[in-house]
Length: 492
Image (tube, rainbow, N blue to C red; front, side, top):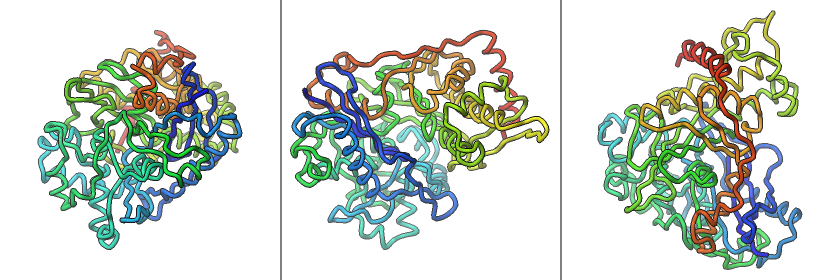
């Protein structure tokens, strides 16, 4: 039996999945570490991870996968990669990482991006990059140039996290147009490198990797990588994409009007459009989607709330006596909609784009010592996450996106029936939960890139709806009242 291997490099863990080519079903998956990977914060607002840690956890995940599924080295036909977006990895000429990666939730470059937005002109930035340079990869690189010039001077190439993993697999330093777009290094208007922004930042274009097609042979597994991972050399890597565009792909969200969501460490809603639309305040971001090309243009409008699953995890560890998530969900479900007036604002994981890059910190409001208990904290947290997402979804709807149906994997926060119910009834959207995740999506995409699947229909043969949640009029009214109360008390 032949398999497709998907690798998902997140900020919490590295996950691997095997998809059977014959059935399209996921036959095994594994992740490492068992607890969340540490995010280092050497200063307030900083967030870093060592790229070597990702490789170590990939090796561990592959060892666990080999224990779970008796596959042979030659059974893997191709490899696809999904990765945490917006990170910055810098390597020297020997391919060694020069410093820890500055990852997606790091806030240090906010002022740099805001200054570029003003100095270059908001209209210019939005028309060409579809975003403010904001706190994204190009601005993080500018921060390194200003604050760590000795490191900047030793850079041979910069990479996104998935580019780095692809390099460790193949020895090839490459990126994609979608990847450059997520780092605000792509000019969508001219379909070219964002040379004027790089020039404004005084960044040498030669530091940027050459691009490869999103789908297609991007390199072959080296002898060293094959030995590390227990695989055969020369397996082709045929796909890479940021986690949110890839999550959309994994849910077969490829065409205008289709919408995907995820709620892991961060929460994201991602809708596909065919015109380069943007939010004037850049509170939601538009990037080149994975299936974009000159003749069939596709863009993804991305809403991100940094503090979603990480809030639930923080509550579990610090406030809820390490109860299981199932126990926390049951506890939250014992409280009525609106959490008896207790409000939660989950903005404690770096600058929030939806709040115009403000970093107000997380808050509980209206806490009454004689009324509210742990169960209220649990409920208010889940409602606060949903309300934060809907706050951004209202911006997306103003841009013309339709949010009638939202697809998500049955994972992370969507494992909570309360969360799924609150999401559906707050947004008014039907929620469809599928048997997929980022690693599975990357595996299926690699199957397309390798020519194993002729089209998306073949690639998604094993994709199934596990649960459908329809909004209910009575609950919609109750959640609408709770959301308006939450929104009226929002301050940043």
